[in-house]
Length: 174
Image (cartoon, rainbow, N blue to C red; front, top):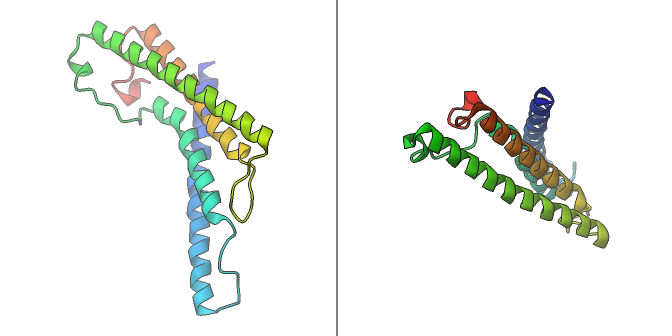
């Protein structure tokens, strides 16, 4: 099960990186169209319809999909000023408590993100751009990324229980 979960986190991270690359390409194409439009007016269209909307959707998707990979690879910023001074047993308990709170909050966010998707589907919500995009599509990716993060937090909690020592102090230990 662990190799499957690790592979899931890697795939989510790779998709996130691909989305960042797609944003770069989209914005670069828009800049190129602006330059061509000023040098040769009327030759090409001056804008990519709804490019800012699509870039925003891709940024949100990239952010949420990257969370589980970032957690498991030790990339989240942690402030260990207090925890590193605690005895190992207390540090383990503190890390466990933090993971449980994180699971609760992220689970709560996932639940309500799913409710938002259902509401957008029910009402047929669409973006306001030139190209109206059904909002359930980007919202579903956000919800999926949050669900992956809940799984990664639970996975990390079980790693903590199995190791009986803090696992988030060093990125190599997760």
